[in-house]
Image (tube, rainbow, N blue to C red):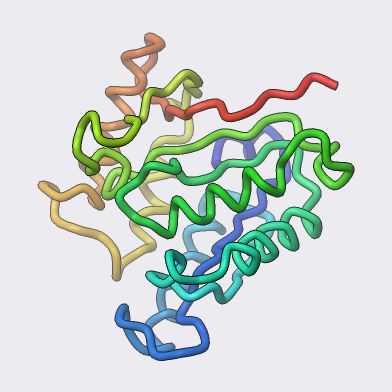
Length: 206
């Protein structure tokens, strides 16, 4: 996101889940607003132009009707008209990621008139979720797109530091040291100091 913003692209972030309409085991509504404020601060560091928040009930997407999830994703995509779409990896341990990714793929079907402006769809990795499912039971994250972020890594780490309620100690996945280590590993795949890795889900040269 920081690299795209620095190159002059308009970057829009969508956070689709929140407290939702009923009591949520992840905390009361006030706690969600705290995290959303941290998200706004992080987005400002990265150069994100706009943040969209929606209220799909976090931790309940596996029991939320698919048409509600798909409709929320479709509405955001219609309002933004993106050229590239980045979604969570479908086979993360977090089931919300699966549901959101599926909703995005439904909305980004390349033959749909509403998706004609979309050129690429990619899935990203999340340190605390992507590599946890047992090996061989679900498809693993095997990236085939790598982006050099050597020039913007420090900005990424600064943005993560805005998530004060979410940061973990250095030996945990949601830590600055783990993010730096992953960036270094992915950078080694393409011979640079730091990179991010993605799975290409669609590339449409119209």
